[in-house]
Structures are given as C-alpha cells and as structure tokens.
Length: 131
Image (cartoon, rainbow, N blue to C red; front, side, top):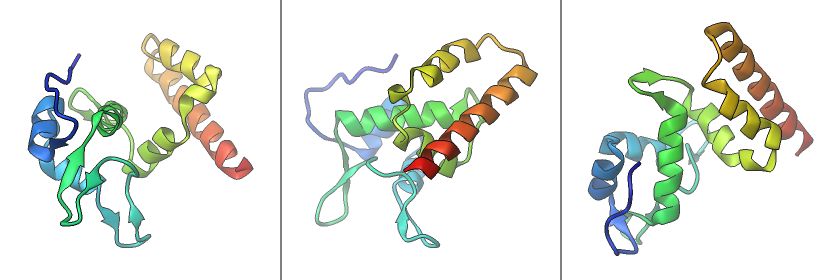
C-alpha cells in the first residue's frame, strides 16, 4: 500500500507520479479538458494555482489511486476513461450491492467477470437515467 510520507499539505505532479507510479503525462491527460465536450475528463483530480500549476492534496491523491486501480489491473488496461469517471463519480459506496460484487469479483472466472461488468454498467446507466 502506498502511503503519504510527507507532512506537506499539497504535492506537485512529479511527487505524486513517483508515489503512485503513474506517469506524469497520464495524470495530465486525466486532468485535462476534453476538446469535444469542453469538460474535464475526470473531475477533482488536482487543485490548480492561478498560473495553472497542478497541486494534489490527500483527497486528490486518493482519487488518482482509485482511478489507477479502475483503469489498470497490473499491466492490463480495463476500462475507458469515460467509464472510469462514471464509476468514480457515481459514489459506488452508496450501493452495498456493488461493494459486495467488488469483493466477490476477484474469485470469478472470465465469463462471470464479464457478466459482472455488464451488470455494473447496466446499474450505472440506470442510476444516470434516474438522476
């Protein structure tokens, strides 16, 4: 588990990159504005100064770590950035069924994993429709 070993309130992108083992260009991409939608690809990843320098507090770092875990399983790429953002922004912990599914997910075979992913996507779509 990666721990924040500094007492600093904010870290810069190179410190966060080294701590989480995420390349800086990936963090910048996730924190950039999509030219098609004119919205951030993932909200709340960093705090920016007036000059545009990215700084990261504990909450930002936690979100980046979660995003990394959603997007990557070892060296394997799992989801698109849009789906990962929906998973992050849906606040999964509100739904105990999803939390239970996440715990059981690791012990399933590939067919069952695909079915779990489809069920989660259906639930996310339903939740977005209800909002």
